Image (cartoon, rainbow, N blue to C red; front, side, top):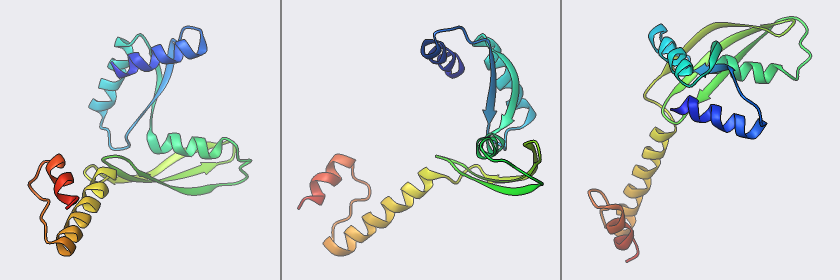
Length: 147
């Protein structure tokens, strides 16, 4: 569904049919997940030319406008909505990219930081106003927070 919608959007924007695609996936995807992504592309009517890791895509974007001489080793830090990944890549002359290492945490991302901030501010509110907003619906907490 998502790839089909992306294909449809791209075709509308470009005004021509889209048949081929390169798709990025999280670095932690295993072979089964990558295969399922390929299948989803076929269902969407796409010829998936290649599947690449998201950190590799970020490195490609970084290196596209650089005149690279020699080798460079870079760290790609990807803090997503629900995951955190770090990848080390080597970029060689001619913009050749090699992923040296990838590690990450599939349960740490932007939402986790949001939750911690909310907890902090609710705790601070309780200290200052002696009112506990935990366990209340968001609308009840809003009303109580006004008094």
